[in-house]
Image (tube, rainbow, N blue to C red; front, top):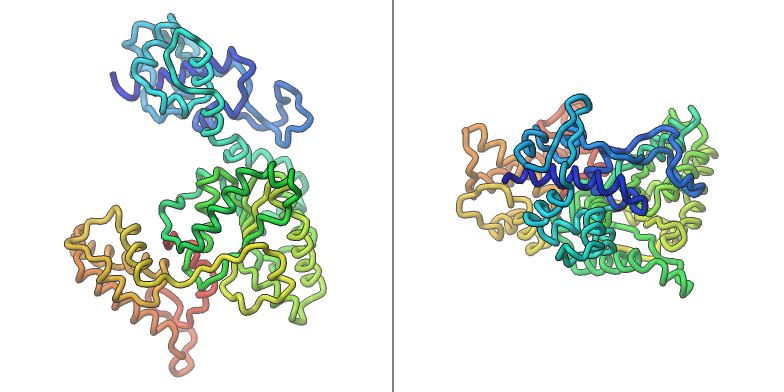
Amino acid sequence: MSDAALDVVEFVLTTSVYSDDRTLDENDLPPSYRRVFWTGGSDESEDDDDDSRTRGGITRPLSATNTTARQATDVDRPWEAVSGLMFTDRDEFSGTITFTEEGMAEQWYLDRTDDERLLENPTLAKHFAEHDEYDVDVSHEAARERNRPIQADRVWIDGLLEEYFDEEDDEEMLDLVDVRAPEEVDVTLDDLVLTAGQEAEIDKIAKAIEHRDYLAEIGLREIGKLLFVGPPGTGKTSTAQALAQDMDLPFVEVKLSMITSQYLGETAKNVDKTFEVAKRLSPCILFIDEFDFVAKTRRSDEHAALKRAVNTLLKSIDNISLIQDDVLLIGATNHPDQLDAAAWRRFDEIVNFPKPDYNMRADILRVITRQMRIDEFDPELIADATEGMTGSDLRMVLREAVLEALTEDRTMLTQEDLLNAVEEFEERDNLKNMDMIDGDHDALVAGGDVDGSGDDHGHDHDHDH
């Protein structure tokens, strides 16, 4: 029997068990199932819980149709996948897929699955663990722990934002933040090459998140505000995003430079609201890039309203806490030399992101070439030829090598391709840093502006390690 049949039987079985067992909630459904059955709007929850922080939810009974099964399992023709089984049936009018013999379906499913798969589905883990006739070594608690919480789902996040931004004036606040669900982050900690110091800090903060209740109990509250410092392209943003992905936390990025936007009216109010959004989305990671902007604004003769916004930002940082608010705050700067004492003392940990050394460059090359075919690949040789480059630079070198090979209709790279791409990158980098000749400030070089004006922004968004 195909994997498609197993996927569809699991889906139908889950919808049936969840519909009947009222002790189960949204966190007992796998995320791909929740996405299908989530409904927005002002529907009241089953428990009418006043503490619910968002509209919408999942209402019983769940209906397993060709459409919902396809959306949840990615099986193109769900009914065709299971129509040959003796315990399945389909209502021609509604399209609902059901079991004529649920016990037979359950045994069929268990004969073809294992405990590891069951742990990915808390609904079925609970159901089978409670029935002595089934020999499974899983617990409902373990499955719940492994399952991504509903608060990390895009549908939940969108529901909360829709509820919170209930005034037209609030819409401009969305220009200040970018909210991503963990499933939308495509970099993990396994994709990164980190220094020993970076790994140690990540391990500490992971433990702090795991043991938040204990830290609150002993009164240790000044924890969970990190500052990432280092040149562009060294992995500050990628590391923050990977933390969100690995820990199943929403990722809220504040575009600090947008405070100066002419489209933003009451900037201080918007900054304040940004932190309120993070608290409502908690537990989450709040990432503030370009933090040196704070110090530059405090020293300058900028407009008074802008200075008020920056002061509001600093006060908001003081008033947010991982222990009390379940918000991990990460600031990032390419220019630590521009930060003043008021900015530094807001953070309890400073994490350095230097340019990678020889060994790190070799490791980064191994990671980013995992899916590439390279004849007699020697990462140490390329690492030796790329001194001073960041992880982001190395990714651009590999991209150039791949594109050059494709112009010759080749998908197999060579060492020479890589070395030529290094040389091309260095030439382009030199051109970007040259003074303009004859005052032609509009001249462009392929691959970027000659003046390199974009160097301070955005490089960390490459998955550079």
